[in-house]
Image 1 (tube, rainbow, N blue to C red):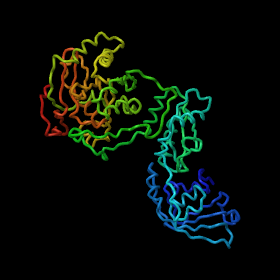
Image 2 (image 1 turned 135 degrees about the vertical axis):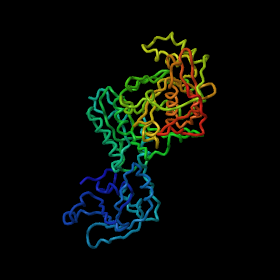
Image 3 (image 1 turned 90 degrees about the vertical axis):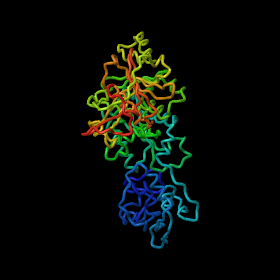
Image 4 (image 1 turned 180 degrees about the vertical axis):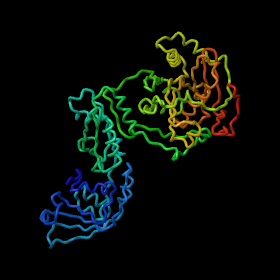
Length: 499
């Protein structure tokens, strides 16, 4: 029989749900020593102390959430009736005690019998995984690294605050481990007593810091595998927003973005250093090089925080598994739309496009232009910014886009205009020949609004080349869908659809 470490009493692992939720129920019997568990004839002389629970009645409900803490705390001060037995001889006096679930739990953890007395000080509720996550600092990481086998040449670490009684966390850890089987990963499980920095905190005794070690020179491949495993499954039936809800927003809202660090800590064997312009190559069939001018983003005060967060987030948390060869690209989407399109023959972007011809760092004209903009235009903060919208994020995704998701794309040029507007621009050679380019940039703008929570009225968008720049207000677009191509939003100002 296996018992949990961290308890003074011998608590069998069969009591997993009880100690996870702080709910001991009628019929539960626990002993102070492991030897006392067994048939009565075998263990009668080995019983030191025992507790049998007489109420509350047994309940078959089970918590499967990662949030054990809230259930545990809710039960901490609830009443429990126990029979406390000292020894096993007939002349020993049995005691029936009304105490609390939290006091019973504390007895099991500390061995202090006096804690059962409700007149004594209320014991502290232990801390759970959410608090432990906050304390996995550099010192803790260094200690974990010291426990990695010396034969690992390029060790990448997946570190989790772990609770052996939490089914959701246990399943998550297993899913990550098995998804990395091709790398032959190894597991390191360290009790919290190993970490000197954690000694002053009162954690739940079943917590530990558990790590997966992967010897590989492909940390981004590992990261992508983990993200794919943990990526939330969305169903449009459960979506809370429609296409119009995003367009009609009159104020910016907080965005709920997936962050790998909320689930686990990934430490690559090598961390790349970046300069003023941070670059990441995404293999999105083909390869797109996302570039972010970190200095401009830091120094410009008129960039919304949610946009800054997104620009940083995509380096590590972009769902690359959505950008497959079969994913539907914004540039290929056919959609009925009309806009108020303004043609500029004189525009800063036209001049920059002309001047960028002197750049020949790369084979691609497109990439040379983007790099030139980053280097020479104070307003350009990012290029080839990845975007996505999943089918399950919008109630009417299929009806609007007439595809099964996801919808993906990359913004050529992201600028902050002098008036503070966020500008989404696409470079289109022979721009004057384009008949539907505005659909593409509108959708890029819409997708960025979805990802950041920034209202659409804070954007402008357009496309350009060395001769022309075409610009429009995304809030004045008319988008149609359905059998009767009904306008999505009747309050839209209809523009010239000939553009």
